[in-house]
Length: 557
Image (cartoon, rainbow, N blue to C red; front, side, top):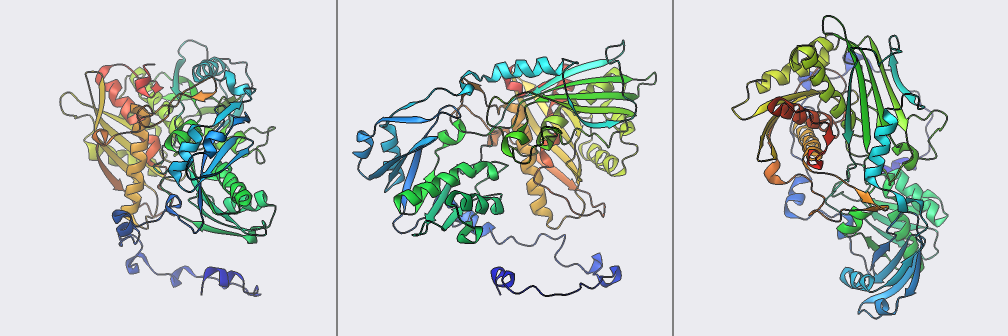
């Protein structure tokens, strides 16, 4: 029986019986959970047989390519589309509020038609003045404005009133915008029913329920009239959640207008230029060490625009102003710090924003773990001893930390290399990482990376390790080169030659140890990200004596 058939059955009035603990299988009886059973998707992915939404072909389907607003919020005026319509294979040219769309019998004909459109844009957007360098300057200014309004995210112990007194240690850290760089650019296939009140859609999406709701809203219908084919995704990392709703909307409108199935595809250049970015952040730390070199008080101020306010305005509460996509991870609850405070200083956004793999934990843990290394040096301690003291009341945290120290033989790096360490989990999971790094001729090279992770129960260990490995590479990539910048409201980068994710020759040897604490399972998709950048940064500090404080390091800042 199919799931839909079960869902359509009448609701039965039943009372669920209690499940006694001793009626469940013991771990010794498990035969699948915790084992690396073969994944059914691997053979087709290996041979190229797996179908993504970009591969879908339907009878009478047309291809759509968009000429998109160069600056957010601007509208087009078509001066002439004669040359586009004259291209062999072009069927129609349709203007929408944010784009001009060329429909054709092939993708290449649609591209050729787009290239000869004569369009002007309204040039009235307030984002015409947006500049990423100016945004970073504004963030740096507000994080140091101690009179600026802030939203308290976490507060423990006695609030320290004077962080300007002698002995207070203050440091700043910066992370720039990054783009998702998923291998499959955004696309959607839609076939609107003849009556215009229903549709079948083919979509790689991280938010199936939201996608159906969006489609229903676009057509002014009910969700039961939307048939969603949830396709495999060629990478998501936060970009294929509800943040991709505009593409689905436009595919539906174009299908309804043309009376045919439509495959709407962005080029890589479209995807980069129209990227929804991880927010840039500037962090200010103020800390006090007592006479014994113990961290007794710390304040973490984070200046950033609100991602949550932009992507989910209907759920944003301006009176509360709490943004988990920026602030999660700043709680720092596993470190025993008697007086602690984390606060968010909001500024207006200067670009489209989105969740990005690791959400707030990535920037937060980079800044915090770099600062912890600097505090250890200030206290006359070392990175391991200083953190072990902070983790004394976190058994799971101390367990992964000690494990990665042992795995890596921390501190005994080969000549010309150095080790850096970071403690940085994700939500209910715990993790620590060590990077082995060299720096020659101006080039940063990460040779090895060790990670100890306690995610609770692991259902499929090999898949979990793969998730952690991917997260580590994402984190290292933000160190080496990934950076989205914009001038005059337009993203400067356009493809992988000027937006540079990590290359194969930069991938280190990675060793991962999973620690089973007996706790309930937690996720693996994000937990590799937060530990990577600070571990690399701390290795560079140990190697060069200079403390990196700005991601990516290639920015020169």
